[in-house]
Length: 402
Image (cartoon, rainbow, N blue to C red):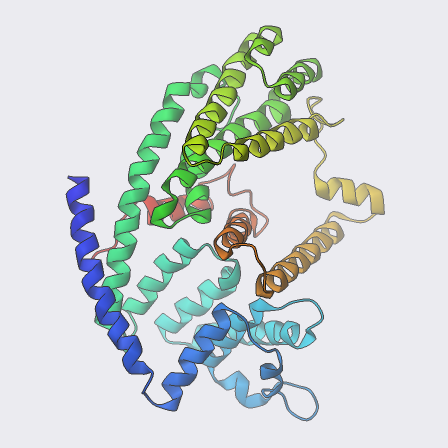
């Protein structure tokens, strides 16, 4: 049944793609306004000259008053300014200017535009997960009086097609998790397999990355249980033995482990054996070695002086103690560093490079999903009902009416 539905979707999607392709070609000969919209979209997706923003400023270096009277233009400028990099102060100014004015606009806009502004201020487009943003924009575009019906239908069918693939994979990952029976064997660990899978969708949503999504979800699930073991349950002596066993990466090391750790260690080795088998089929068996090294690095980090003793020091707490500052000051500094990191990421992604763009986008998408999960001072993974539940329902449960 699922295969038939997917085939039906695929055929209709191809027909609509041809319609949209013709529409795009026709737009090439349209008026200057339409051309400028197309150019603007391309620049926002790839790169742009920051000097463009200087044209919006007056002789005193302030943004022209007229800029602040156009909500749609202000929203476009706000989203474009999110591609800022270090050293381009004009983009920082544009970001602050537009954010402030959009907040003042919100109550006076029509419902559709107000919805766009509210969402844009809550979740920056540049930092948003592609599938989450696609789901939101489909609902916005549907209420747009100037919408193109063929384009809208294509977007809906494409979304539902992908959702069916993702549901199928989630069933497979969930069966694997259920068979491990960690819920009863390791009751202290967070039961978050659906959240782990949606992280995978956030990083690799395209159809061709099915194996990558499954492997990524299983990896996150295993690391989550390991983190909980170090963070909230194991004694320092038990954790030292577990760390040594992971460093050895040999099933014979299981004999030295406490009973409750044995299922975890056995599952860890087994899942990476499965990964190696899959990678060997693709001629990339070496990749598993590097992945295993990262797990070994993680357990060494987890075995720090604060783990296993009931007093886990967060990065904020360490910074407060080291620099003798308040929690608010420490959080402000961390946010500033996070913004600087995004600027670095923007700059690097704009540079010519021999590294595959497809690989770079996985890094970008991971950074995006971290922002979605942990922004607004919330731990959306641990307390998933607050943050991730709505996204899980939207991406994995509820299809879009076509």
